[in-house]
Length: 116
Length: 112
Image 1 (cartoon, rainbow over the protein chains, first blue to last red):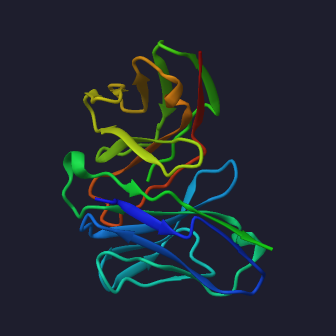
Image 2 (tube, helix red, strand yellow):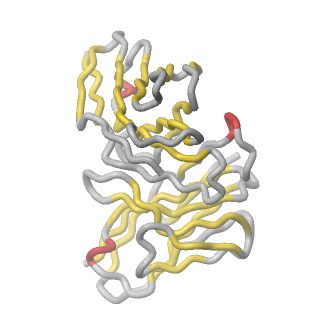
């Protein structure tokens, strides 16, 4: 299994541009999430999904949209990029309500985004 | 989810045990203690979690106090590859949203 993959690894945008960060997982996990990490800080939840067709907002959803048309993919869209969105973005997935030792999240390698 | 408090940084000599403390005085009875780590420029990695009893796996041991208001992650024989930021999180195991509220964590530096 490739696990959780993210593309691109690096991206530079100008203010006002839009783009989509891609995330895919091949573990058939129900739950997927997007986080952002700013320098010296922990991760903050942007959006999450508990299954195909179901998404909800996290802690910092403004300026971002998500959709979940398949179990495998969970893209994150920046509608109109702003310098405040300069950050490292992590996608994560986990199994459903399996509980026990399988209740862990698997993270992708991250996308480093700079907005000028 | 209950909030946690961790020291911002700590050093450890290679080959020695690293003991990472975490305070979670407002933890509720059905919340678990989770530990993740993040090696520089990589995504977070799950380490261990527990509810009341001490837990051990191939990576680490987790010691939870009897009143559950604090815990300690133990890396028994630290290596240079254990240099990372370690996050202590408390949450419901059955949190159906898969959310993990990370704080600032503890920067652990393992030195030769």
